[in-house]
Length: 307
Ligand SMILES: C[S@@+](CC[C@H](N)C(=O)[O-])C[C@H]1O[C@@H](n2cnc3c(N)ncnc32)[C@H](O)[C@@H]1O
Image (cartoon, rainbow, N blue to C red; front, side, top):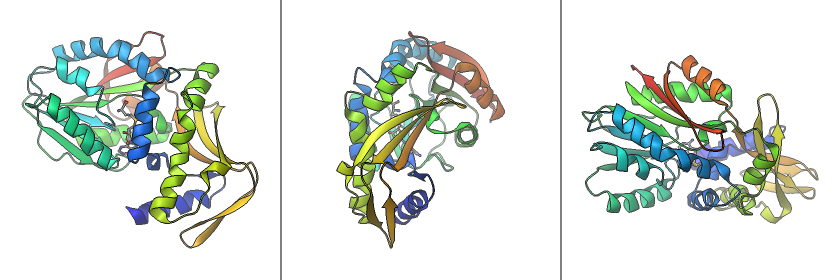
């Protein structure tokens, strides 16, 4: 892991413009900060999704047979899954895939205590690569779950590849996927730029990880967090902007920053319903149903694949 992290970080920080892969935002601190972001008044996606999830869960429960195995990609604090587990008829198991290993284990322990009859299977893996399920599906088949706006962290090409890999992972299945189509720049600025002041800490944590895990010497206080709303395709880019010229050490390299030079730490692509559906079809999924949250921009798509 350390070798891959170092290789990826060096590749991103020696390229122009500088970038770091967003998947490295997620260690225990990053996951914890994100859980707090989800509760902030500025971060609309979670609040919007929660207005519609109970209805979605009730509708999906009518479509699946008893004994379904639920597989969540990027399970985080495993909060939203509770709404599904409460509604589904006798779920056979819950498989939670996440890259943030320690946080995943703790979330599954909490969930197991509340759902002692449902077997829980944590899988610490990177879903930007192929993932194999550790157990066979239950008698009710497989329901994939990818809530939130995580699909937006992929550009359209990567999102298509993710959806193809998910088909390979899940086999014949239903797949419930969240996708946000918000275009209002003020709302995007508040959610991604501020989130009650938590977003800056969330993005600066990636520099703390470089220092702690790879022995780098970045000074997080000398970077300002900012977001850029970019068109074609619509996306929100998160950047850490150097407030003064500086050089830092990473591995055997020196990384130089001019004043105002930035590192792009994450991107959130916005996928209106039609755009997402087209991507899903190109990846071999059949759209089965669509629910739109109150407020009108956050969608949950139910997809189906014969395998
Ligand atoms: C935006 S959070 C969503 C958490 C939760 N599903 C929700 O909707 O509130 C994204 C989650 O995906 C995980 N994640 C991000 N990139 C990942 C990757 N490449 N492979 C596996 N998990 C990843 C993070 O650790 C985090 O828990």
